[in-house]
Amino acid sequence: MLILISDAFDASLPGRLEKYGEVTDDKGRLTEAEVVLIRSKTKVTKEYVDSAPKLKLVIRGGVGLDNVDIPYANSKGVAVHNTADASSVAVAELAFALMIALPNHITRADSTMREQNWAKKELKRNELLGKTLAVLGFGRIGSALASRAKAFGMKVLGYDPYVYFSDFAEINNDLDDVLGQADYISMHMPLLDSTKGIINKDTLSKCKDGVYIINTGRGKCVIEEDLAAALKSGKVAGYGNDVWYSDPPDWSSPILSAPNCVFAPHIGASTKENMGRIGVMIDSIIGAYVANK
Image 1 (tube, rainbow, N blue to C red):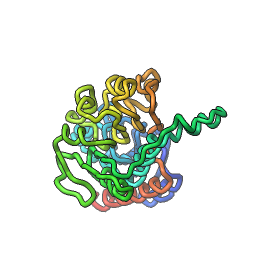
Image 2: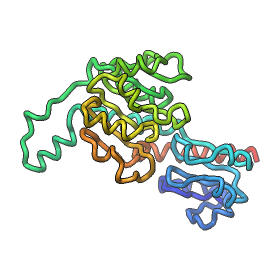
Image 3: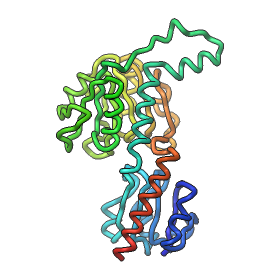
């Protein structure tokens, strides 16, 4: 069995998987591969599946599967898995870091100091204590973020059509009501027809003036033009973003020139610890696949 590692993983992964067969990172051997390991870069399209006649298993190291044509893969007998359990802490910590950085003006404080500009009077901070956080998409990552927010004394509202109760949040599936209460909004939704562009001119109008928005879910859940306009008007006080319409983004994106933003290059899952956990999960998935062959 040939296992193709198509994207970047922890350096220890090939050695961990050698017990199952040959492991390669040579993409030119796709036609021989029975198992392919991907992250965000590789797109498993209809054409990709058709070019891999021996392919039986695709494993995405991470959560989102919008870079895989799952129905077509399944129709060709290719199973698709992700490693959702591994990434919760890594992504939740990045979301929380962005949520702290924005109201504390961390990037502006650093840049003004490097410019020898003492901006003490201009940089007015806000505390998280007592503020309301709306978590849109209350799965593993949303729940992990909520537990951290509670530790900071925040009130947490959870919005998710498939979740009914939580120890860490008040579940409220009236989106307009949730948006209207939130001082902070953190997005952890998959990209579906129902979530694409869910943050738009209309939903932004339902938000409090001066709301902060964090997105470590999927870039296309936001209409960039509408959010950029809201940032420029001050309707949205700040935006922390790790996810884009594409990796890398179109550098002409209106978000990139909007004020009061903190950006990251899709590093939510890229902790050393998480890459190790992803390797453990991939080992387990392939082990189960081999056992059931």
